[in-house]
Amino acid sequence: MKMRKNNWACFLLILAGIVIGGFIGSLFPVSWLNYGQTFGLSSPIVLDFGILCITFGLSIKITVASIIGIIVGIVIYRFI
Image 1 (cartoon, rainbow, N blue to C red):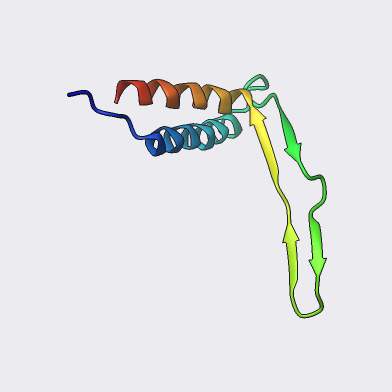
Image 2: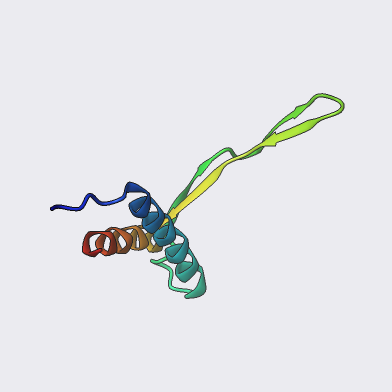
């Protein structure tokens, strides 16, 4: 009987790869690991209703280290 792999496990391994790759990239001051691009809103969007104030903002930084982390996460997923 063939077991079906869990998609949530793949998602969590990729997310962990992004976080750990970004951490390693910021930990070691190697210029090519920190090379990347930032996407998102340059300034947050603020909705002020008088009583309630809501702030929306999203920024994603993709670096070489996080891409390496994604690849490692996918490789680990294939072996489990």
